[in-house]
Image (cartoon, rainbow, N blue to C red):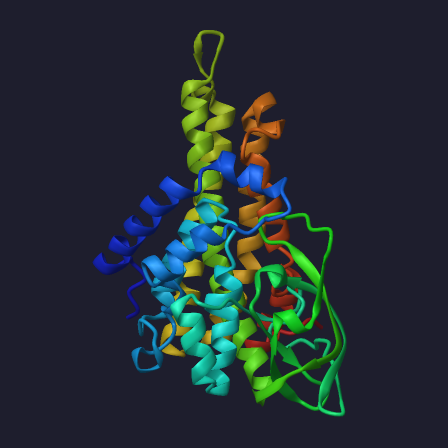
Length: 357
């Protein structure tokens, strides 16, 4: 039987990542960065990727990585979600890396695993695994077209671009025009990427690479959503223990206890679903079902937890200075990433043969 509990090694990894984020990713700094023209914290990314080798967790040791599994990556994403860290970990170390693993592009894998380069799959963040996505034209050996909703494109060194001919092309980010788009979640900004005769190197077939990448992205996104939900619940409980009305802690009021108890049950269930998805990606058993289940459930829990945090913090929860809005925006944006909960429920119905009449 699968053991979804955290191993000693995973807990040790969590402690290292949390300590690093505590020292280098405080809420005030994240809020300040969202107000600047440099939303990505590249110094933090360097510490994560180069300092402790997290960028190459999914890459085999023979190809310059750490040879770990999706379970370890899930732990990292939980902690990044708890800190709403503005780093391209999910897009580069998971999604782009999975696409390169499918294509067997060892040279690019080594670059991403070392943290020297940031890779981004040029597919809209809203596209679900297996769904149709836009591609660019190949004319006279160069790429032409426009792709929108590309997460973390502004931080990318290399873009992995689907072509209309069915190929996946590696394109230097300096050869394209990246135009920022209005993003709800300013810690994971979106951009429009314009290809006007950009040179690209074909590295493999787009269809299987994109499908594998988006499936891993959706499955491990649930761990990030778990981190968001866990932080907001923990912080709300802490605040309600300290905040007093009528000379007693607000958290002692029965109505609020019931709301927090219900939210705790939802977060615990989300943890089980997210861990199952990470384990399924590791073992390759019932992967599509596990990912669909996790994403069908995760979005509503993360959004509910963040909404409760804003409301139960009262007036302070509505201010820009308090980080609750960062978590609400991340939860809302994540609810649309790699397919909506409804899209995953439809996919799950097909997978288990429970189609609507």
